[in-house]
Image (tube, rainbow, N blue to C red; front, top):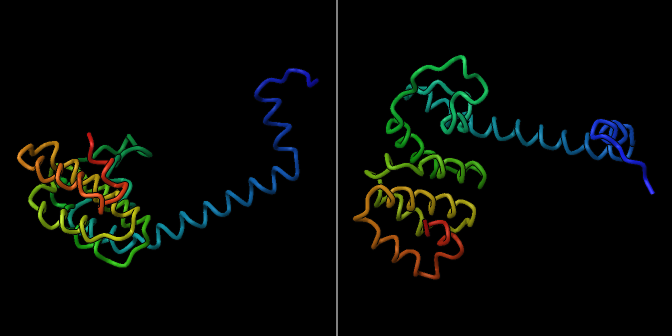
Length: 170
């Protein structure tokens, strides 16, 4: 039977375990490497978004541009200005992770003018992860433009669209 420990005692014990420390350090190194790869891969997209007036250093900052620096609150360019840039880049040969992030970034009502094109991209997408991102776009646009709901229901009923259909339910 082990004696009771505080959280601090447990963490100290865990961090002193060489096997745990080695696994933890290896995982941290792997995550750091992937973050560097992601940043390098998204660099052309970030550069184009900066040209469009967005003061960002990563695509993630479009979701919450002040998460890491709330003291720098400055107005961003209007979000609709990002959509053509994102649309251009989502077609490029990025990793599934980047393309999915781009697609989910477009999951706003401002994407409405590109409905036909985005719907076609959804239908033609073979990568399941990216298809999920496009399903989020379809859902977001339809939520704010109710006239499109019949088309979304049709997409949801089409089994060829796979598991991504569940993302359109809301």
